[in-house]
Length: 328
Image: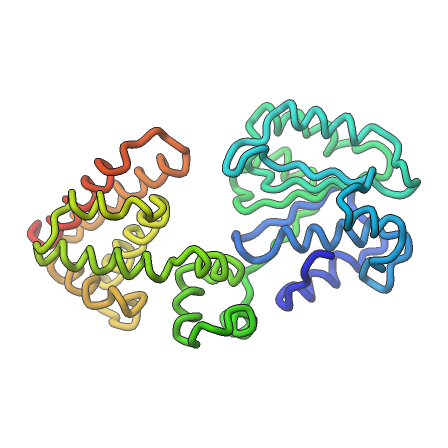
């Protein structure tokens, strides 16, 4: 059975409590808050032959087949490789499944995640099934970036926003999920995960706090001219490029905010507060805006899986960063 998270309870009541189900739901919201788990829980409930209240029984033939991964009326569509597109041929296979009769005589349930990874041809191939799914079929679409979806996809679904849980609920859950971390470390992880508790757990497993400490130390050495941009760029090869661009983008944002407000409470995580404040005070605002534009443009290339020279790109970033306080 899919895990039930405490922050989803009212959403669950709303979805599972419907007397009549839509033919397509779009569950959308930030990554790392359990949308996939919510979709899987609903899938179990919709396929269960003897539901208990709002939940699947876990014991009927349908539930046992689903648990074994061999339910004939269930179809999961996702990229064949992580971070790749869902292709049109995959969607055509799905369309063939949708037009078949349910083998157990109940519903057919399809789960697609992440739906924004469909290329344009795949998305268009799905439209017909979304418009007129045959028989008793329910499609569950999970999206981390619904703004990237075709309007025609969004308009054919019942849209269900899945908001971030509150900080207090997230930290309470993280206390159980990460009992070996201190309260301060859990707050830091949640901040680095942009408020997504499941992402915070994943980042902890990836050693993000150690990676962050390495980058922060490097930035400080760069500004004190104790290490060169080239040395740092080569030394950070184990740290995900997107993570690095996210952090530098965040720091440039915090600098701009401080230049406008001089609010010392808005300087971000403790590890970079003094550096951010120093750079904000010593750098011309136009230069901060320029480097932020550049960072955002490069970040888009990273997201688009462009073929980039990693070391040269980081070197270019760090050379500009080091020059900020001198460019008044």
